[in-house]
Length: 239
Length: 239
Image (cartoon, rainbow over the protein chains, first blue to last red):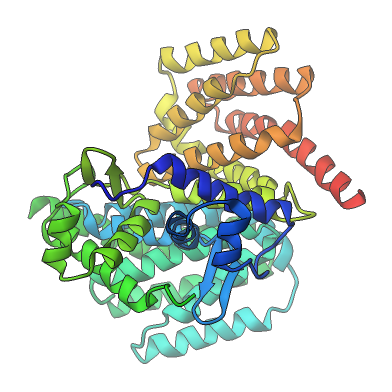
């Protein structure tokens, strides 16, 4: 381990790069100085700087586009997805525990924004969401995967409430589910049909301004998934 | 940028380390092979491996303890805190936008778990939570910061509901708030007193099994904070 640099020095370089972004007022997408310029500006070694850049790229605070240069990153929740996804497959004997937790938090978040969603959609035409529901139903009837329509539905709903973090969390948890979920096996035709209907019911309830019906539809939406997760968790413990 | 290694090769090394953790059935806290052993086992260059380790350490998938060795990490939400905290200070003209979003999501999560919290605490003695509330009140009366008691209160509540991810999210958002919040300035004595009372009200409502009163206390808990954030956001736009 002799070649590992002091974490304090690395921390200092990371903080120096962050300070520079703040002091120059840079925002996501703005170009950063080159590696050579940065090493000079911040008075740090190239080796140390490169480790700092790697750390900041992992956190999506910096984006390295190969052949183009360095830019301020989007500061997305991508690191959260990577960590949770791995955690979802790595914990021995509790394979689906993380997945169940993710689904429960998704349910909690969907219930929490229910009043705002209903307020936004009541009495409105929603051609985009209606189209997504129709496409989902068509795919479901053909026994095809409709994960992409499903994701779009939830992101559109999340986008209604003027809180970007909320939408990012929904997207992050969706991605974790998409990456770990296939290990649950193929959903039954009945579960697929229930899921399609739950989305249509959520939309209908919101448009008619019925908060209770919307909450019921949200619960129904997650019910097949939680049923599968409960039975799988039980099976994993029994096996 | 000629020295930057191919991202595909780095990705492959990262995935190889992850595969090794899975195939050996390692779990958080278990020792990893040394860097030399890993390079040999996975047939990757030391330089490439070191970048992969740096990435995985940033994601808390690996923990490098200097002088001791490498261990499987806790896969915590620390990367989420680091990214969100920086985002909270970096976005020009929207300094407190991220903070407001964090507080709104905290409120949503607290409301979402309200039924389970009330079910868990109804009719029970809660010496730990009661002590935390008393200590918070004492500190508040002396005009002292009670962030650590506040954090403990919310983590204890979150710990009641058997979903570890939920507690981690509460902790992560709390940490973001603690790091960015001081930029809001010193809270008024009135806001401090309101916050102390809101925690006591949450506890009393839960113990008496009154879900509606609990939800009201949760709303009252976040009200002073959202008021400050609304006025600050307004001021930032006006300024």
